[in-house]
Length: 254
Image (cartoon, rainbow, N blue to C red; front, side):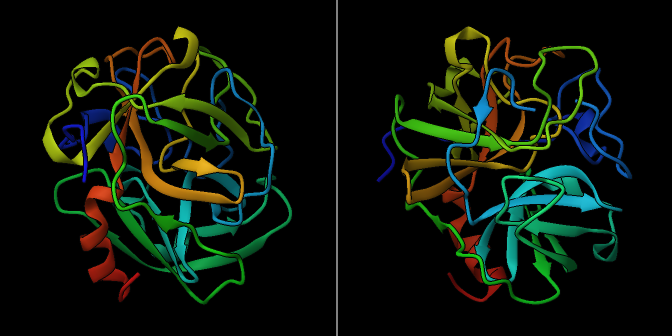
């Protein structure tokens, strides 16, 4: 049972653009090319996450995602809303966004009616092991990990990392995140006060557990303090665990 209150997420106006971590006043990544900016303060991935997804257009990364079944990916709604499935492909199970893993096209997009959550059906099944969705995201203070290919500098242009980045962080009290509400999101700490998700990380996973035993709890959504500069405050992640039933009903069971 959850021991913290959860959050209802509403997309900010800027979140309708495809590509980036949603922060006010800053454009998202270009949809048809590589993001121009990765997790701030993160290090190179310490393991290969079989479920890690790079959503791409024309070979360019624009958002992250998590493989939850052999042919289904969960991501942020603002990453794919208004897009045709045929324009999207997924590289799955590689620490590189340019090589390795499986590359497969998308066949269908399903968006949640009220929160920043979407499902992408793949055109076929892949061999990589999916991640299980946790029964609950956890109490305040729960240790978590986030991953992504997004911006690694807090503000201004930067080059997109080719190698996946990761950051260990934790769950904060809902009240520490501006603009969050009720039972659908997670307030996630900006580790050491200056590390966290940024543009290009949207849709990517937040997990808890340990190496080889991760469970999915969240998907990157937006800033939790309204700043256009990444990692200056906590981040908001849509709570995937809280929407397990909706996900299961759309993917034919988990």
